[in-house]
Length: 125
Image 1 (cartoon, rainbow, N blue to C red):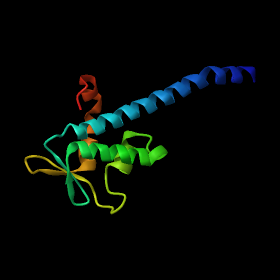
Image 2 (image 1 turned 90 degrees about the vertical axis):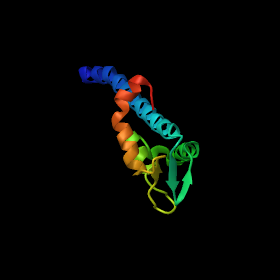
Image 3 (image 1 turned 90 degrees about the horizontal axis):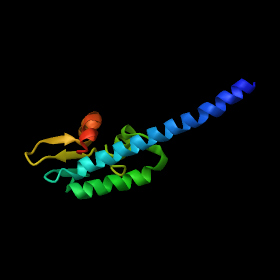
């Protein structure tokens, strides 16, 4: 019994720290994704049929993240709950680039998320 208790006392802080570290990493990924949106100065963000600039799109994503609260634990959760579709109309978000190419916002963000480990080392959204 004493051995079990000692094991719990020694391992529990390490597990708690690992969970905190993972949460911090996910928050960094989410911030990086929002920064990736904000950096697309020549793109327009289509939400409910209206086009918005990059700064307004990033602000909107931050607002949705605040409202999502504890539901968002990972960057994937952020994409699913905050960056895929309007919670009011259900219409999907999209991004229209300067060359006219339009991409689904969730697709764009998942591509950016896949590039995160390499891009984060260079600190470039």
